[in-house]
Structures are given as structure tokens and as C-alpha cells.
Length: 254
Image (tube, rainbow, N blue to C red; front, side):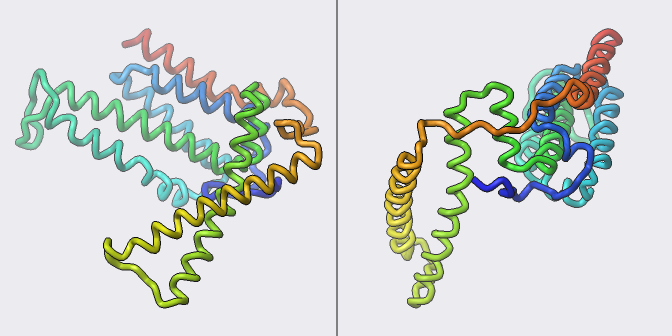
């Protein structure tokens, strides 16, 4: 897989977060999200601090605010679920703008919205500053089984190949005058999907045999990159450390 391979969420740049070792960013992301999730929902001030920290990360990473907001659309299903909780929750009820809402449902909605929004925003920052090859190298440095990183690398690489094959087959259908618009016209699409599966399987076999002839032993060779330094780890873990302190204070002052 080419080292230049990126993804739709990646924003090319040279910010301090871009240059951090990927394993440091992944570890920091996991710890930061855990601290946010473990924070009591009643500590409104703590979530304000977390929001400020995430905003600071966006600024340091030099990610356009519009880019982050567009990617936050991923959260819409969680928002819809949270909005319904106050209406269908049980227990004590309260009046809000003439509506009878569940108190526990309101707390649950706030808890989901606050923590899910922050978690998604953090994930967007990490994804926007890390390429796919860096993700895989980071997981490998964190001792993820190499067989899983190898499978993931092939999956990422050939997802684009299959998507390109699908586009060519679509153009071939339309150039022959077939442009299905109704459900009963889906037979050609189903046949194309079957053909795509067979062609993908056969291509995978050819690639695998080619790799075996070149000495492949079941795992990709390790990267020759130098390991992350103590300074890099300290810089990456500073943010989750602050979040952990905020979480601890929130529990003590609850």
C-alpha cells in the first residue's frame, strides 16, 4: 500500500499534531475519550472544559471549522435518539415549554449529546491528522496483532480498487443504454454485484500468489521508522492527563 494513501477525512498539513507519532495520537485519543465518558453528567463545567480543549486541538491542527462541522453530521442518528429520550423516558416528569418531559430522559439526552459530540469531534481531529498507513503503523506499534493490521491494509488498499471497478461497470451498463431507476430493474445491478465479487476474488488470488512468489510469509515487513520518544509521548498524553484531572475534580465536587 502506498505511503501516500489518504482518506476522505484527512487534511494535509504540517501542524504539531500532524507530526506526532501515530501510536501516541491513538493512545491519547483512547484515554481522552475514556476520561470524558467517565465524567459525571451533572458536571456541566467539566464538559465546557473538554469542549475548549477540543476546540484548541482543532486550532493547533489547523483544521477548518467548516470541515469539522460537516463531518459531525455522522452524529445525527445519536442526536435523534437523544431527542426522543425525554418524551419516552419514565420516572419523574417536568414541564418544559408546555411539554411534559421525563427528568431522567433529559439527563440521558444531555449525557449522550455531550459525550457523543466530544467523542466524534476528537475522532475527527485524529483522522484529519493521520493517514491510513500511519493508522496501521500506530496500531502495530501498540502491539495490535500483525495479522489484523495486514488484513486491514489489504482491505483499505483494495476497497479503492473495487470502488473503481464498480464505477467502470456502471459506465459500461449506461453506455449500453441501461440506466435502472425502478426496483424491478435491479436485476442488472445484482448481476454486476455478483460479477464484481467473482472478479475481486480472482484478483485477490492472483495478488496473493504474486506476493508468495516474492517471499510473503503472512505478514507485511515492519516499518523502519524510529520509535516515539519520551518527549513525543509526554506531549501527546498531556491532553488526556488534563482531562483525567478534570474528571477527578468533577467526581470529588459532585
